[in-house]
Amino acid sequence: MPEAVVRSRRRPARQANLFLWLGAGLLTAFVVLAVLGEQIAPYDPTAQDLFAMLEGPTAVHLLGTDNVGRDILSRIIVGTRFTLSIALASVFFAGIGGIALGSVAGYFGGMTDRIVTGIIDLLLTVPNIVLAIAIASVAGSSATGLTIAITASFIPPLARLVRGRVIELREEDFIAAAVTVGMGHGRILLRHILPNAATVIVIELSLNAGQAVLIGSALGFLGLGVQPPAPEWGTMLGASREYLIVAPHLVIAPGIAISLLVLAFNAFGDGLRDVFDPASRN
Image (cartoon, rainbow, N blue to C red; front, side, top):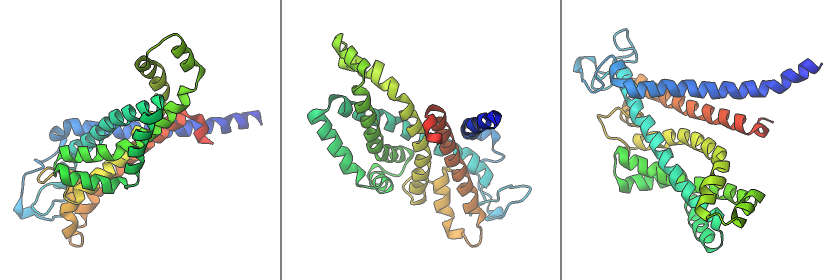
């Protein structure tokens, strides 16, 4: 009986490690594709072959060809760099902005907190995808515009999360002790508060990366992302919707790639959450 109890207690930890390793393995594979895309791709992703238009999967073209005869597998492999880099850059810059705003609002409180929180609450009334579409329309259809749009849509919820965590930590005894000995506000934030909030922030950013892939692909599908002939997955989906009936493989290939990348980020984030927050397993 005790052995059975021990096994039941260990199972959640193994499950958490399974999600973590699954996500890490998939992300490693995508990073390799992003770095070595041109060397791995069997064909030039922009080379057209008008005699092989809309071909289905064959031994020559494993995932078929698109409307101008370009190899879809090659475009998926090389396009990993666009989709992955946009997602990671967006999350990185959103992390900087969200951490800065949330830390200042939560630590100093008072009028500063009311102003920052008011702006955050106002932006949170607009859904992420709607805010991203509005910003992408202004910033322009490019990788830079796409990154700006996704970044701006992620800052408000992250800032609110960081603010709440900073308010909790601000009341701890070790923070009161640091203030008592005359430690400066900046040093307290950087050396005591943010390191203790790092776990929550890292988990949230890893989960946001999956959302960034979805939002970036949605904007690309709407024509607000990276422009052709660049093989960005969302742009590929948008260009192939006209051929959904006659050549469904044009949609299936980038759709599966997007799903796998989102799964990788979500599994990695869930694994991190279970490892660093055992209570979430219950």
